[in-house]
Length: 211
Ligand SMILES: [Zn+2]
Ligand SMILES: [Zn+2]
Image (cartoon, rainbow, N blue to C red):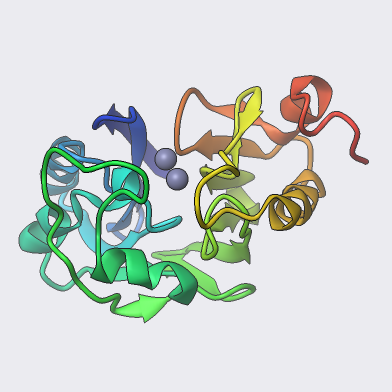
């Protein structure tokens, strides 16, 4: 597996390019503003085919560049949890006016709890982790011990739960689910540097009281 990261947009959000270099299949995970073009260049350079744009949730800082991805790879499917599709259909911030507009679109399909997505031979399991937003998901690849965590879990912090459609109780349950993953699971969050589940269970105040 190859993984490339690019960070940008008003909220310094991480975009990831995940590729199975043995088959040439690849996906972009989250699409912050002005971040995906360099990742698409990496894909093109390596002759990887972008099969999916996988969105951990519908917040504007994770969806802004969706059209950049589908303009470059028209066959790429844009997938999100059904409960966050409304944010894709009517993009924007719930709490302030964005200084730019995001083209509205529907999802091509839905990311459902327990379902798997294959990027070449890499199999990711969708874990439904609402709380930060109603349709938040994380993507877990057991074979690579990798968790793409979106805005659920950051190094030393967790996603906001004070937004108009956040749910702190659901967030609690969602954190419980990922805290049960193996300690050596690498966490690639939606904001900030990589970490591991074990590291966060040791030092993240939101996770330290868990099994
Ligand atoms: Zn968010
Ligand atoms: Zn975010």
